[in-house]
Length: 224
Image (cartoon, rainbow, N blue to C red; front, side, top):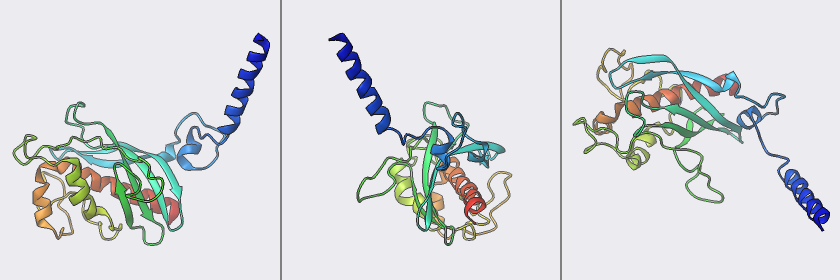
C-alpha cells in the first residue's frame, strides 16, 4: 500500500512538471527569448536615467530595471521598475513598477498604468504597482494637500499618454520655470494649471517623465 502511495505521488509530481513545462525562469522571462543562462537579469535589461530629487540634485547613474517586454502587433508591452524618490523614508516610498506600451509605428506612448494592463475586456492583469506615496507632499510641504494615486491616474498620466520622443523632447521637469539648478525646459508645457496643481509632487512627476524618456531610448534602440 505504501509503494502504491509513493507511485501515485511520483506520478502527480511528473504531471505537475509537465503542466508547467512552459514556466519561464530568469532572462527568458524578461526578454521573451530563450537563453542558456537563466540565473540572473542580463545587463541589457538594466537602464540608467537621470533621477532628480526634491532638491534638484541629479543622479545620472540611477538605475531602473526592465522586468518584462513583449512585442505585439504595432506596439511593445513593458514593465519597468524604478525608485521615484530617494529622499523620503521607505515607509512612504518603495520601488514601483510602471506598465507602459510604446508603439512601433511612431514610438508614441499607448498606455501607462501602475495597476492593470487594460481598463476592461478579457483577462486584465495587475501589471504595475504604485510605490510612491499617496498622497505625495503638497505645496504646503506636508501631505494634507498632496496628490493621491488616483490624481496621477486621472490628471497627470494622461499628459504622458500619446507623447512621442519628439513631442516630449526638451521636457525633463514638469515646470515652465527654472527648477533649482537643472537646465530649464526648452519646450513649454501647454497646461500651466496642471503644472500648478502638481507643484508639490515634483519628484513623482519629474521622474515619471524621465523614465518615459529612458524607455523611449530603450525602445528605439531595440525596435527602431
